Length: 92
Image (cartoon, rainbow, N blue to C red):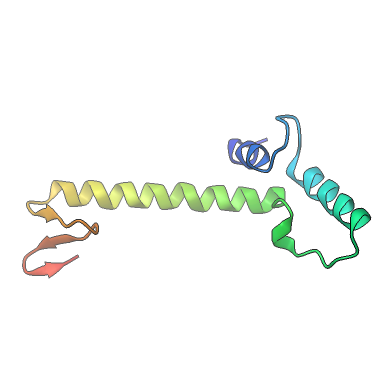
């Protein structure tokens, strides 16, 4: 099990040995057995595949952000409070 999936299991209240797909199925069955309501997918934990792709997106987003930040710090200008680089009379 990948670290991203383990993090999701913990976030959704599972044990370290739990699997997201099993948790999702268990929560679905418990909810249906208790109430006769429509179950929306956002009420359930994500699937293993969804957690994998979410972790990948987060990883690449952080790497991209760090790359932009290091590029901005290496230039001879200043970083504006909202995170934009101001140089050569333009915002980048």
